[in-house]
Each structure stands twice: as structure tokens, then as C-alpha cells.
Amino acid sequence: MRTQVAIVGAGPAGLLLGALLHRAGVDAVIVERRSADYVLSRIRAGVLEQTTADLLDEAGVGARMHAEGLPHGGIELSFGGTRHRIDIQQLTGGKHVTVYGQTEVTRDLMHAREVDGLTTVYEAEGVSVHDFDGARPRVRYQHGGVWHEIECDFIAGCDGFHGVCRASVPTAAIQLFERVYPFAWLGLLSETPPVREELIYTRHERGFALCSMRSPTRSRYYLQCSLDDKVADWSDDAFWDELRHRLDPEAAESLVTGPSIEKSIAPLRSFVAEPMRFGCLFLAGDAAHIVPPTGAKGLNLAASDVGLLARAFAEFYAGSEQGIATYSERCLRRVWKAERFSWWFTSLMHQFPDNNAFGQRMQQAELAYLVGSVAASTVLAENYVGLPLEH
Ligand code: RFL
Ligand code: PHB
Image (cartoon, rainbow, N blue to C red; front, side, top):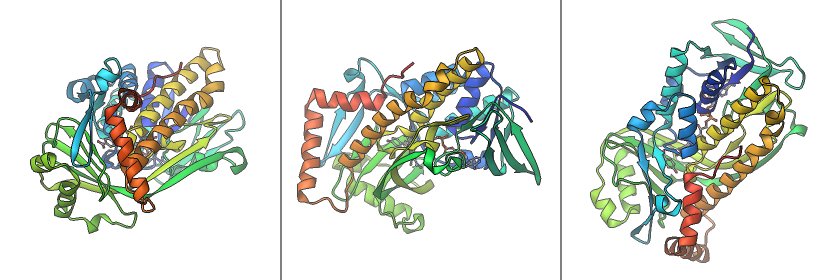
């Protein structure tokens, strides 16, 4: 098989890249290790920046997001038993985020691919990438017991943190930056109305908690938990009791509980690989960088990477190499700013095992400053809605 761009991974990065390339008249094939149902069963992000929503529109898949997504112009910070609203819309000159699940974004992109008759190979085994430092890069995989090879001009490594693309780069050619946090998030999805109309980020002595949602009837909650915890250790009742403990009294009182639809534990990590281009291989999304989910930036960074990458490939076929030559540095400038924000917000809101009484007071003082100062609130607001895209 021959194509212009071989995309490894059908997560949001790979699927959105495929859709943007299709719109730009560039040929692409996606190779994914898992089944489509498995990809859709992973419950992850919920908050889209305006730049991500714009890219979904550009890709022609924004209709359901506009119809069903929830525009949010603020978030609440809860600490010391009280909630404080950050008016994001007012602080950013009218910007907002959209609450619309990653699962739905993925579903819309998969549907569009099917309608457009584009090739996605699911359940590809033994995927490997070859000769990306030369002029004839190839992707090999096994499907239905038969080995296949895709010849292409470029390989897009959209295969997530544990993917094969970044791992195929010689260690001398890549620099890795990493911080692993000493805790995890336990997430629970339930068919219950959200506790409040907006998201609540809570700092509590027993640990961080987040109240989010997928729709007016479906809620997503997270609790900071131990890295050693297993999902089986947490009954639904134990989860709801702990969440009530960490919320302010009014929110705790109005919390509607119900059986969980999904529960999962995710460790928290900050990670960046530099550069993001190796000859004809380009990394995008979680394959190149990870942020802790506190800032809601992971999916949005994946989208802005592939927005730049799609344009760079389209420019290449129109005769300019400028876009692909500067892809890595343009992405990394934005990535590091999102890394900084996500690290800062995580450090402010979580309990760290080595945080002594002084550290506790620092967190409390910073939160008091944050909600009391327009300057400090604006810093939070403009990062939360997303920094502007460089062109
Ligand atoms: P993905 O989604 O991991 O997709 C990679 C795909 O590649 C496939 N793959 C392979 N395919 C072929 N061959 C191989 N060898 C392969 N190895 C892997 C995988 O099966 C998979 O389908 O990466 P992508 O596309 O870069 O997307 C990144 C986002 O998924 C991620 O950044 C976000 O989910 C992070 N995130 C959030 N981001 C936000 O912007 N806003 C949020 O509110 C938000 N909340 C979250 C989050 C992540 C969370 N977890 C579970 C870590 C909340 C949580 C709890
Ligand atoms: C989510 O709804 O899954 C979600 C929302 C905000 C975050 C992280 C996750 O910061």
C-alpha cells in the first residue's frame, strides 16, 4: 500500500490529523493497535479549548459538539470549606471552554472517516516504523495473520505515551524531560446530574477532588488517591463518601450519587520529548508530551500539534518546506507553556506526601491570593481557556 502520510494511532490526535489532511486533499492511512470499540471505551478528557473546537470545525466534525457540548465561562475553586468562582469569560475578554467528552470527539471523527470512505486499520499487530531518516519511510504491521507494509512520504506518530514511534528513535537523537507525581486520580462516571453547573476544583487536607460532567445528566468525578490503590479497593459508596468529605458543605449536601458506569485510576506525569521531528517521522499528542490532567490540557495540546502538522504537510505538497522545518520548535513553545501551567495547578491543588505545615500554608496563601487578585485570576483564566495558536 502507498499513501502520502501514514498515521500511527487512532486516538484524537491521529483521527483529527486524518480529518484535517483529508480536507486539505492529502492522502493518509491510519494504523491502530486496538479495536474501534476499545478506543471509544477509554474515558478521558472533557474540556475543549476554543482552538480545539475551531479545529474540529475546520475538520468538518463540529456539528454535534456545537449542539450537545456545554459552553462554560467559569470554574469554581474550593478550599477551606468555601467555593470561589473564577469568571473566565470576563477575565479573558469573552472566551469560554466547551465541555464535550473525548469519547464523543473520537466518535464524531471515526464516523466522519467512515462516511468519507477513508482507510483505518484497527487491531493492527506488531506495528513498526522504518527508514524515517531516509527518503522511503515505511510502516509495517500484521493484520488477520498477514504482514502488510505502507510506503509513505511521512509518518505521523500519534500513538500515545506507550507507542512505538517515539521508542523507535535512537536514544542519542532525543532528549526526555519527566516528572512523576507521587499520587494518582481515581475517576468515576455516573448517570447523575452534576453537583453544580460549572466544574469545581477542590483542594482539601484529604486530597484533591474534581467535579466535572459530560452532560446535564452525566457526571464525571475525580479523587486524588494513592499510587498503590486499585479500582477494586474503591466501592462506589467509598468513593461518594470520600468525595462528600472533600467538598464544601453546600456542594456535599446537593451531591446526587448513583451507581458508577466506569471507574479507573490514572497516574499523573509531566513529560516532554524534544525534538518532535526526526527526518520524516513527526510526533504529535501524548506520543511527544504528557501533562497531569489538572489543567485539562492533554487533548488540547494533541489537537494544536496536529493542527500545525496538517498545515505543514499541506504546505509541503504545495511546494514549501517551511512548515515541516519549524513544526517541532513551534509546537514545543506552546507545549512548555502548557506543561508549566499544568504543573503549577497540580502543585497548588494536591496533597504531596512531603508537604509540611509550611507548604500547606503556602498553598492556602496562594489560593487566597489567586481568588482575591484580578491579576492572579487572569493568569489562571487565560491559561485555562488556552493560549493563542502560533501560525
Ligand atoms: P491517545 O489518546 O493515547 O491515542 C493513542 C492511540 O495510539 C494507539 N497505539 C498504537 N497504535 C498502533 N501501534 C502502536 N504500537 C500503538 N501504540 C498505541 C493507542 O491504542 C491509542 O488509540 O493519544 P492522543 O491521540 O495523543 O490523545 C491524547 C489524549 O488522549 C490525552 O492527552 C487526554 O486524554 C488527556 N486528558 C485531558 N486532556 C484535555 O485536554 N482535557 C481534559 O479534560 C483531560 N482530562 C486526560 C483527562 C487524561 C486522563 N487520563 C486517563 C490520563 C483526564 C484523565 C483522567
Ligand atoms: C474531565 O471532565 O474528565 C476533566 C475535566 C477537567 C480536568 C480534567 C478532566 O481538568
